[in-house]
Amino acid sequence: MKVITELQCWGTIPYWVALCKAEVIFLEKQERFQKTGYRNRYRVLSASGPLLLSVPIVGGRENRGLINEIQIEINQSWQKKHLRAMDSCYNKSPFYFYYAHEIKGLYENCGENLFDWNLRLYHWILSKIGKSKKETHFTETFQPSYDNDFMDLRNPSKVDFTVLENYIQVFGAEFSPQVSILDILFNLGNETFSYLQRQRLIQS
Image (tube, rainbow, N blue to C red; front, side, top):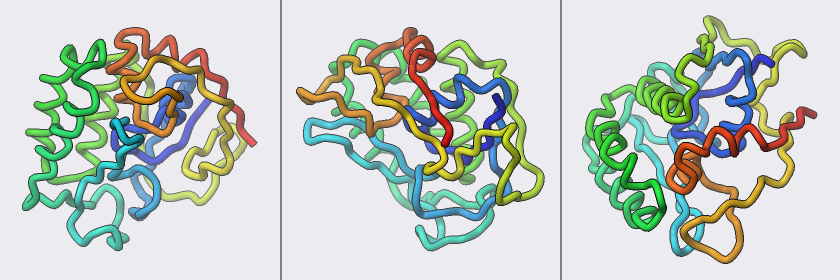
């Protein structure tokens, strides 16, 4: 299966289910920034439920520049805010402290380009789930649609996921699937890839 997708910030659980099942991944590098979705946002699970964290960008969320040219706003202390939130949400999870030091390094050296930073997060996750050699390409032009050889994740309505398998989370009596891949990593550790592979993926 070939997948064409935007590059998300950390990425949702369904996003990573698709990426793990893909034989080849094409990352969309020629689109315009969209304020919806997860290009500069992600969710962690707090005691009050899913918490949305946003990476501030130059020009704000109304910026419609090319995604590979979007700059991170460096005059805000968002990195410290995100790291504090992450620590508060996951310091009781089984594997948080195993990854925390490296994640802190990623935030402290995020650079100024959103696409480049998301790409570092993408490769970091692949390395942690044992898939660092996953074949990955970048789009050279923007195409509104692709043929049936591709699963196009840029339009979420075209992809349907069955109910995700529950796993033990730090907070909540009920399982919350509306979180980023970090939630699985901190709770399942090296079992993350096995979990993602077990989930079903249906294209409409």
